[in-house]
Length: 236
Ligand SMILES: Nc1ncnc2c1ncn2[C@@H]1O[C@H](COP(=O)(O)OP(=O)(O)OP(=O)(O)O)[C@@H](O)[C@H]1O
Image (cartoon, rainbow, N blue to C red; front, side, top):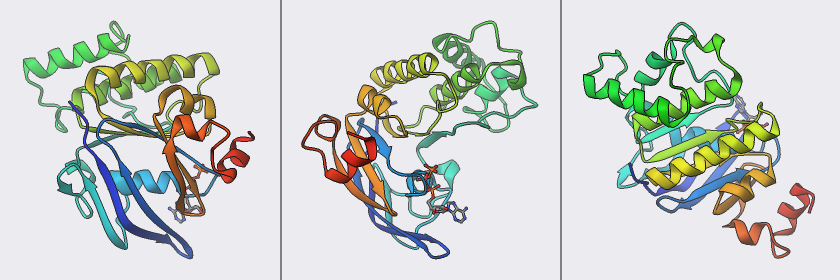
């Protein structure tokens, strides 16, 4: 895997009378923290990239592809949500195997890759467990293992560690940082935690009222030179 650039070109979208407009260019292999008040449009932005929502106008470009109307499964993208990433009736190995084959027809090579991904995320020995028999952190490790076997150039994280305690959250962010160093995928991560953004991201996109109010290097956004609205939002 290596990353792909993501571009939203004059993308407009609305839910009833909530209108949003996104213009954003994310460089290949960079990590962008998507931050902003509740209801500002962070999840919608990720859903437009993933293909769960389709723009009213404008274009979504991923690498060389115009993905604007492409169905989610065909996009070179993986996404992890805060919860419900796994199928409750399938064991850990099968949930990860789905990243390779939707019908779970797995070759010996696929099975090796599933085992390697589970080893990489620290889940060896838990292959036969059901999601309900795992902790919240372990379930998100399963989701990350599936990302590894899916091997797509863009990874979208919609507050995947928000319900974990602080120490575990840091541990999971560290795992994401390592996987990024190994694979080089482009990451867009929604987070409400400035510490998480500072630890992981090289860019911060600040969303306010359905538009990108600021987009700059994390170094700048977490300095005294950050836009006033962002400083107010993080309580700086
Ligand atoms: N399925 C939907 N139907 C109608 N309106 C929606 C839907 N999903 C989101 N909205 C509205 O669109 C706006 C943006 O929502 P979105 O979920 O993208 O915000 P967010 O920044 O991710 O919020 P949060 O931080 O609370 O998760 C909000 O006003 C929300 O109420």
